[in-house]
Length: 325
Image (tube, rainbow, N blue to C red; front, side, top):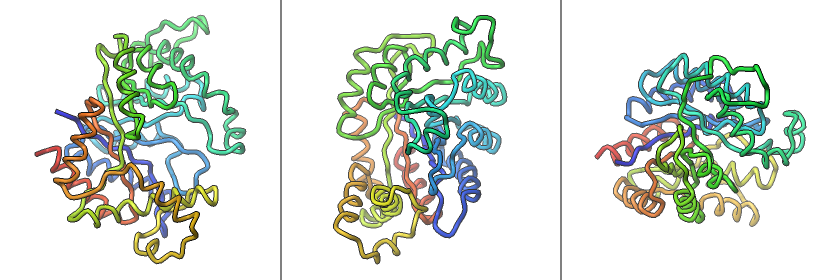
């Protein structure tokens, strides 16, 4: 049976604050656990006004403390921004405190702007070293690292949080070579990336067989039109980021529908809405079934943010009925 999990990006809502967005994430994790979702992941963003989650391991610890069964992790920690030793130590602490529940999702993205990259002390070229950094990180857990003789990552050494590679660019090949589960977006390249990953996969101490998680934005409503409106808030913030260079807090769908948009803004909005799944429970079940069949995914990672938290919860409750039968 396909597992269903959640990625929450801790997006700020118009009229609210980043602090409230973080508290909303923790509360949402408790609700996700009650609804039967398999994992709850948080993300890493730096210097983004509309995204509060800048410290994913700290936020994951808060989520784990507020829940008891659901797996908790990151989607992901952007490894080029950090020293592998520090990442190993952080996840070692998490796995020690919450054994058997921790997922270490790792990505290769760097800061969104030049100013952020300089503040983090890393440049665009650091993303090209992702495979090397990932190998070093895994070696801190196994105790096999030789780059820094006599140094040990404590309490990480000997522990095994579940590791996932967020596959962008060469990510599928890296995940396959190191024998790690992989997360891919649901875009047009997903089927090819999944096939390349499975064909090149080498079993490892971390995973005996290939494991694909496909990430997709899903909204479920009483009608397809209602579900589509749920996705309007985040799509509009994405479009605004393309025109203004800044991702703003989520606005209500009603306000966006009244906005006088330029042709350029309208085009970016329509582009941002592409690839998202929305509809009634039956319609979404069919769409996700086709996606899982095409990619062979073992798991679906769902993300959907809107301005109204009650409407968001209703969508996830309806989706839980889809995968729960």
